[in-house]
Length: 185
Ligand SMILES: NC(=O)c1ccc[n+]([C@@H]2O[C@H](COP(=O)([O-])OP(=O)(O)OC[C@H]3O[C@@H](n4cnc5c(N)ncnc54)[C@H](OP(=O)(O)O)[C@@H]3O)[C@@H](O)[C@H]2O)c1
Image 1 (cartoon, rainbow, N blue to C red):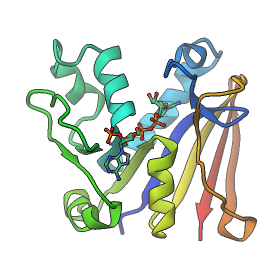
Image 2 (image 1 turned 90 degrees about the vertical axis):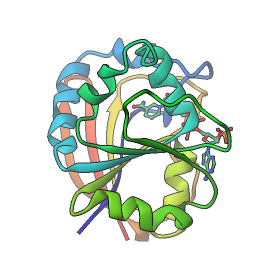
Image 3 (image 1 turned 180 degrees about the vertical axis):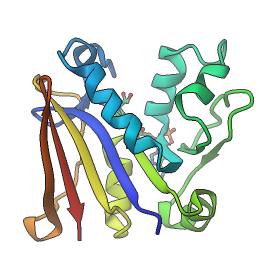
C-alpha cells in the first residue's frame, strides 16, 4: 500500500532552509554524503514526488535544470512529480511533472494512481507536509537532523502534532546527522 513519507534534512532547531532559501549550511555538515546514500535506499521505493513551488524553484535554479533537463531524470528516475503552485512555473523539458494547486485532498486520487504500489515522497516545504497531516494522509516523517542551528528560516513542520500522533521508530547516527523516523497515527 502506498505510504506518504515526508523525508528531509533539517537543522537542529527545525529549519529546512535559511531565510534566503539557501542550503549552503547543509552541504557544509560532515556526513552529508553518507546521509544522501541512505536516502537512495528510500528513493528506490518511491513512485511519486510532491513538493511546493519554493522547493521546486530551488532545485531548478541550483542545478540549472532548464539548461540541463537530463539531470532531473538522473536525480529522480522513474518518478512522477507534482509541484504545488498557484503560478505558471517553468516545466523541465521531458520531465514527468505537473503543476497543481488547491487543497491536497483534491489531488489524492491522481497522486495515488501515479504511485501505483510505490510510495509518495513529500519533499517539502513544511507547510505542504502539514497540509498532508491536516487530512490524515502523512504516514511517516524521515529526518536527517544536521548538527547546525540557524535561528530562522523555512520551518520543518509548522503544525501542532501531539505525542499521541507520533511514534519514534528509528534512530541512527550518520556522521554529524541524527536520522530519526516517526510514524504518524
Ligand atoms: N533541507 C532539505 O532537505 C529541504 C527539503 C525540502 C525543501 N527545502 C528548502 O526549504 C524551503 C521550503 O520553502 P517553503 O517553506 O516556501 O515551502 P514550499 O512548499 O517549497 O513552497 C511553498 C509555496 O508552494 C505553493 N503551495 C504550497 N501549497 C500549495 C497548494 N496547496 N496549492 C497551491 N500552491 C501551493 C505556494 O506558492 P505559490 O502558489 O506562490 O507558487 C507556497 O508559497 C525551500 O528553500 C527549499 O529549497 C529543503
